[in-house]
Length: 294
Image (cartoon, rainbow, N blue to C red; front, side, top):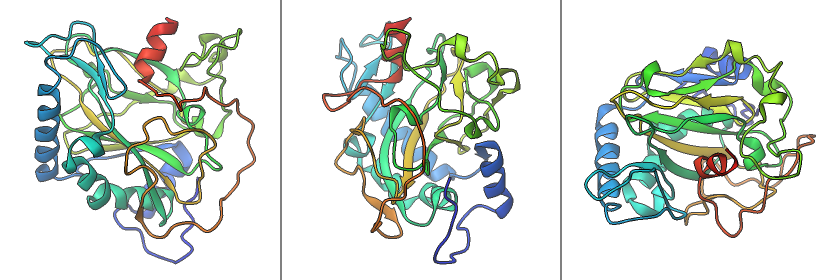
């Protein structure tokens, strides 16, 4: 993780204690990071997109439908490319305090990668098995993270994100099976000593932002409650973190600099990790990959 600030800029929104906690534990939870005005705008934009899926009968690379989706009762797992679908989301990614928070953790020169919503619909929203993000999108260094914005209050009964504290300091796990097929998760036989018993739920009221390091082990339970758990997910990286493989969701804004300056050199971290499949022909969602293998 790069928290070096070569221009000696003070933190924008986080405290030094917040920065150190993220460095030590590989995650951070900040309640009240996004104000109610932004949450209201994001929820309204989300509702417009969901309403536009009523006549859809199958998933595509933008809209991932959940089993049981109908015109009268739409149910989705994910919507991607949000920054292209509604200008509210792109404005949020570049102009809200979220990018400032990201710059405090990843460095002052910050690049946008993707913006999507994971829904965890009430009454059965799908579980996500244990995995790391970096094996899905390897870069030249690990200054990349996903920032989750809670659009509703999130409690433990809604299948919140779970993380294993400190696991970002451990190995990169293989996300393939023994025959070389991509799983999109870590086979249980490799998790015996991964510290899953120490996992913590990341919860909080609407406006909470949670962030997890790209190597942090994380998962989530199914949402069996009667409350949905939609979260806006924004991925940012340091400008000197260059992608080794195709971006999963290459929107028109992908790779744009949202804070600081473009990098003149790539920064290389030594690492050994198996490359993911080539997503150049399109990517749906982690839900579909994990469901296919299950």
